[in-house]
Image: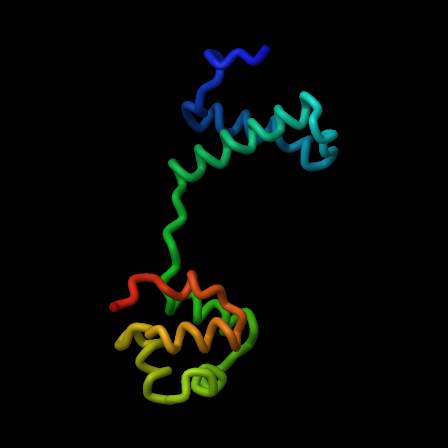
Length: 126
């Protein structure tokens, strides 16, 4: 029987590091689904993820940061961005932070560059 009273979140860096050490072998030798080892692995991963989300949150990237990252990753140039957006001035303003991305641009970039629309939404003005 599972002792729920014994379960708790990781309480500090020492426990976090210990959990990382304990989970590492499971990545090299994945446990059989449904086994006690698989349940242990799942529990460790959940605890680690929860601790990291609380202790080391990763801020969401702005739409411009996403666009710039995609450009770097795919060797796209400003000219490539202009080809999708349709205006050299708008592309420059967008990359320089002078203009927010609009819904039409989100749709075009999402379709042409296969960027999830959600990552381009950010704090879009209505």
